[in-house]
Length: 349
Image (cartoon, rainbow, N blue to C red; front, side, top):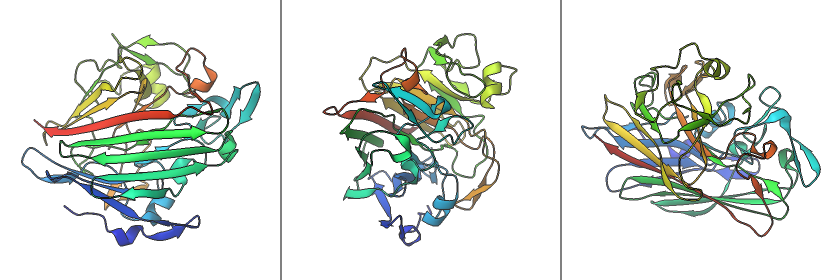
């Protein structure tokens, strides 16, 4: 197990000190997180033979994170995923956001939460608590928003991310963690043979610019049916309009869970290593992304990342919910607290 070095993550950026923080449990699982972008930089779990491997893509230094793929392991916000035309209207006022994904605003804009140095509130071997205050008008969003993210690793091999936020003015919010997973281990190749199950009988089809049409479409009879464990690559290249629009899977799934209840959302399994990861969450949606735009330009932790070398399971609200009234509410009012929990449970079989 080659852990990342703390000294490679210490610098001053945006006037704040960056660092690397390590969580570990009695079973050998290790998670390393930087307060730059609140990014999960490494996550070591054992295979069926007890051998540890890093199962997330990322970089070996904070300098590489600043220059490289901005979303590896990051907390995305103020609004994760896409907002159509970089615009939304709230209380009769139209807000204009950066258009950093074609005509869309993606993951909070050019300098979203993934690009900020977070303050360290608490750090020990089992818990890391980070906080960021997003000023009124930052990236075009209204309200001073105080965000807290708590990472916890327990001895039951559960890695939990708890999110909290409060605002002094009505705003929209959607937070997610954007880890790129490969259960075979970082650098082991593509993830197409890894099995995936998603607890969703519907998904939100999108336009050719990847904005949801508003339809909640049944997955039955489509390449989006992961209600039974299926290899990620089994249907990824079939002639399907939605797969063409996303260059593979880059779609939101409507989870079959009760609102507000932390429940099973997804399970991924690598037959070769025996590693299995289950995700439990209280969010209404889960974005499946299959690394379709990885192109070999990012070399992280000694490995070059190519197309479909990883998958993402981003627990969140629906894309473009601020503009679609039939989607779950994305507005946070003063006096309210935004809360979200996602649990990653690791085991072998």
